[in-house]
Every structure is written in structure tokens, then in C-alpha cells.
Amino acid sequence: MTAQTTTVEAPELASQRIGAATTDRISRVRISLAYLPLAAPISDAKVFAGRQKPLTEIAFLFAEIATEGGYEGIGFGYSKRAGGPGMYAHANEIADKLIGEDPNDIARLWNKLVWAGASMGRSGLTTQTIAAFDIALWDLKAKRAQLPLAKLLGAHRDSVQVYNTSGGYLSMELGQVLDNIDESRGNGIGGIKIKVGQPDTRADLKRVARVRGHLGDGFPFMVDANQQWSRTTAARMGRVLEQFDLTWIEEPLDCYDAAGHAALAASLDTPIATGEMLTSVAEHWNLISAHASDIVQPDAPRVGGITPFLRIAALADHHGLSLAPHFAMEIHLHLAAAYPQEPWLEHFEWLEPMFNERLEVRDGRMFVPNRPGLGFSLSEQALAWTTETRSFTG
Image (tube, rainbow, N blue to C red; front, side, top):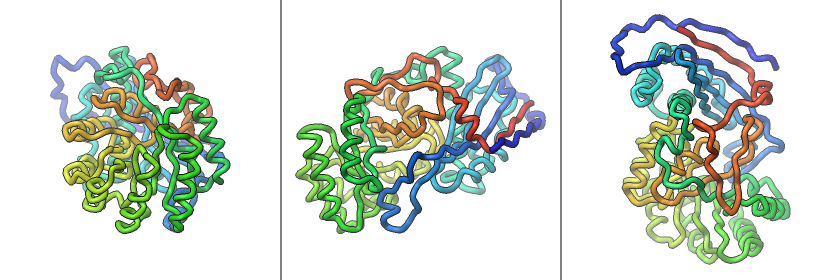
């Protein structure tokens, strides 16, 4: 499919109150919508419960920001199953608000963008759209400093322990899951997560027992119910799962059930992890303040970008919680490296065709690249999968 390209000139800034500290301005913003097809349909517990259809593709909103001084940054937001065209439409509405602005004023620009669409709310689609711009601005800032983003933020480590999720979906036969585990471990992955939440909990327990036996004692092992258990089922399953020495149980309940998650976290030795589906700092604060999890799992493209992610990370660290960002390892590697406590990073190889660069994994850890910024650039394949694009200039 050939992408449709249009260029729009932004109106002149209403205010030119920019002082001498401003040495550069945004001159061009380019947005694009692309669809990444998956090799095979993917199903988790939400599909088995009839709530969603199998996942076959991922929509990406890319934002590329250039400045008068010759710097460029790239960021992205994403959506699964629905929302991609909506994100692109909202990006069209707000992209011109960045023209002429100082790209270093990231927090102020985040506020400007969120209030431009505040009648639609300050979470959900609006923040997921803003994420692409915010991430691009952080990428640009780190490139200007000639530093990897982790180093710009202040890294606590140059590598992060990494676990794999993509090989453990419910749509995969158990034999395939075990083969995927062997491949992941052979490639240097340091932890394995599988999906649970089938209608028959006995099938889940059989699957977990087989995987633990295959991994052996002590190897980091997580399970993810994708919000599909009731409070009663989660409590019962949590008690039975204690025997498998799990690193955590993920999303046992609806993501907004702070009281239910708090009760589980208080009653089980196995840590509770949740937060990937939340789309704002406020939603994460509700869980953190309720002591609803032991491990927070913010997703920078979902919460609105790196700016709100850093606020969530500060709240989590203040409460002594562990961090395991969801998906988008290309972004979260840098953010996890800058978290004070030892975090986990989720490995998904799905996004690799979109980028020219690859991330290094060995000895159970993923290493921060020495490339400036986030360290990735769009591949020719990503451009081929692009369906729409639009540029805004001053």
C-alpha cells in the first residue's frame, strides 16, 4: 500500500516570548501510521474468555521531530487490535502545536499537547498519541548531548536483566512453548514468562508445572493472567502457584481493581505485578498508593511517553517497589537502566523488523547501546508498511 503524504504549514506562534536561553526551535514534525503484521495470530486469556479477537497486527504512530539546528528525534506510540487510526487522527490535530517551540522544554510541551486535547481526557487515546511526540523529544535531547538516553537520565547500570514473553502465549501448544524456552535461553534470555488464565484452571496448573520442570529450580519464571481471574479464582490460584517459586504473578485481576490486587499482594509470598494497561500517572498512583502491587509495569507509549513514565518511576521507587516495564524494549531498556532498584525488562522480538538496529542480549541481560538517543532508526520495511504520513512545518 502506498502511503499518502501531505504537508501542512503551521500558523505563526501566537507568542514569541522566548528568551536568550533558547538556542534552537522545532522546524518540522512528521507523523506516520504503519502496521506491523505478526507471523501468526496471538492469543492470551482475553481471547479465550471471548473478550478480544486474536492479535494479528500492531499499529504504530511514529513522530519525527527536526529542529532549525539540524537535530532530529524519533518516537512512537502503538495500539493493538484497535485505535491506530484514532491516534493518527489526534496526532494530526496537535502536531502543529510544536512548531517554533524549544525542543528542550519537554515537560512544558507535554502539558501543551495534553491540554490541546483535554476535552477528550488526559488518559487513553490522547496520552498514547502524545507519547510519540514526547519520546521523540527525549530522543532528540539525548542526541543533542551525544549520549544514550539512559546516560542522559543518569544510569544506575549499563545492562538490565531480561525475560521473554513472546514465546509463551496460550495460542501455542505446550511443546512449542518448551521449544521457545530453549531457544530463548540459548539466546541469553534470563527469565521466562508464560500466559495463564484459561477457563479451566487445571490446564493452567498443568502448563505451569511442565514449564517449571523444564526450566529447573531457581530459574526466573513468571505467569500472566491478563486480568481474567475473579478475586476468588485469583486467591485460590495464587495459593496453589506458591509451590512453583514464581518471580511474579501478573495481572491476576482487572487492572483497575486496586483493592483486589492489594489483598492478593498482602496474602501471598509470590509478588504481584500489574500496571501495563494503565494510561496515566493518576491511574498508576491509584495502584501504588493502595499498595496494590509489588512490581509496577508502566508502559511509556501508553502512559504518554517518557515524561510521565519518569514520574511513575519516581513514585514507585519512593514506595520501594520493583519495576518491570511492559513491551517496547527499545524504549524501556533506557528507562529501566535509570531506575535505582534492579528492574526487569520484557523481551519481544516482534518490533525488530521496524528498526535497522538490534539490541545485545547475553548472560541473562540486555545491554544499553552506545548509540546516541534511543539508538534506533526506521527500516525500509517500516516505510513499506506505512499507510499514511503528514508533515508540519513553520
